[in-house]
Image (cartoon, rainbow, N blue to C red):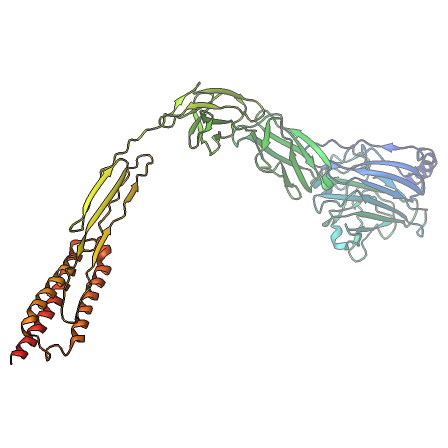
Length: 595
């Protein structure tokens, strides 16, 4: 902010000569420290009149800018010791005093109204959408047009440039900058045209001191261009940048409880560039200030022997305010204890193994699988851990039943236990023979010696010969011998064999005997009264006899397999009924013959 007195035009002419020499040097101001509170931009300048280049930097994560300018000679970077913005100015109320902060002085391309200079700042990446600003001062006998582009290279609307107002930095209570000495009211102020984006000095083009305008962009900027045109004399204007700073803070804990000291945290700006680093204190907390408004990422480095619980990177939004509670949690890496349980070399399945901590406190248990293997819950590194198996019923230990171990940085293996299996159980099996006989004349012999055999023999039965006129039933002898049946005992653990009982299936001859006796009686009786009339139906008797015989055979066949007394009774009953029928028939015939 160049302050000119009534003789300043002669000073400017003389300074132009000096500027021809000084402009060939690199003039630099050190960047402001990343301390709490607002920070003002620092400039570098190189080149000569019409071909200037330089940089503008601000604190961590605010994008550094390079610039080019065709300003005529005598551009420079004043120190800010005599001309500056106090904290009482509108700009200073937001960004603090600029005293002793460098700023950039520039001129038109030539000292006439038709030769403006153009200075373009290009930011390394888009600026924040809020929290920073720039100020243009000494806009009196000149004008400056403000233009910008966004991240996509498109022009930014004038309204989004964030014009904040005009002021005169000398119009403040005492103490004032020394450059304001002798400057009294009325104080000169520029005017802003929101249609064209032009900040214009007074209409009389008078050389004054302190006329300023300031801006707080509302959108991210990729470039900022200032077109400066002089109206009369040898005008000069100045440019300054400033930004608010934010802080990010949090804590790093172990298993969500005690803080962990000495954990390094990196603060990453746009593009993943590390813009700040901080370590946790004794209580595990951290805080990093001096960050420009914007979006950040905080990354916690994981100390050896630990692993993160949850993400090791977290976002921190510092656009509008500080970011607090950006916390991280760590846990010691845990390792399992692994072993086997066997008995006489054979895996023992289902055995329980108790897992104990250094003080003997249970920390879990494990059950062996089909291969006899077990795995205790993972534990952090330490000494004096132990495992103890529970002996299954009947098993005995074949070695120590407790194994102690230390956990360092890997799983502990080989915690094996050997047992002795119980002796096999011998089971004696006895068999009680069971004999059942159903045949009337059967003889049953049963022998049991692990095997039961039933031998049954049925004596033959002979039907007596019977002679009757034209009827001569065959004499039948039935010899039935049952087949020996052998039952084999089945032996398994705690299993008793069951004898098999053979039932006599020999045919009962009682019905046949009854029929034979009946036939004999009929034959003897028939000799007394049978005549020619009586036996005209010989065929009928044959049929009756055959029917009786067939019925008896059918009953025997159907009931033979039942082998029960009830079956024998049924056969006897059938024979009696048939025999009685024959006797009744002969009786009717006989009475008829007598009549």
